[in-house]
Length: 211
Image (cartoon, rainbow, N blue to C red; front, top):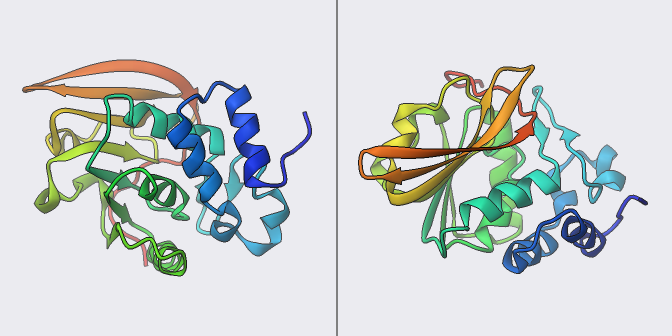
């Protein structure tokens, strides 16, 4: 399969791979992924693969971004979503086309600044950002209809679970550096229903902040 060079070609490939939520595909097509990566890698911007960022981080594979977004939207339209791990800002930018309010937390300050600049450049005024330890969430803005975690936790942070509204969903990679799995967690009162899904590879969810 040839490597796509435009957002439209990428969307066609994602559709072939099983992404069928047209709203998500439209959001992927509307989001200029090349603006979120290093200029030296921009010829690969619309390839369906992860790419390296600074500080040991990565911009996720578009299929994984689409898959996680599709899962979080499966319960219907959402008003307010929390993202843990802004990174490049690409996932938040995709969400911004689908959700009225996106709250995104990043622990590495230079990445936080660069992502904020990208959001400003694209006039994505419904993304609200914070430089902080994402494991604590954003309690003063809770409850959230959905939570997307873009780094792997060895255990699901309980602080994030309690910030879900009733019926809200969290999508999170869980595991160590050698074995991880996406989990879709739905809040049912004080109980949390866990569905174990695709094997994935994400950078670890770390404590604290980094300047």
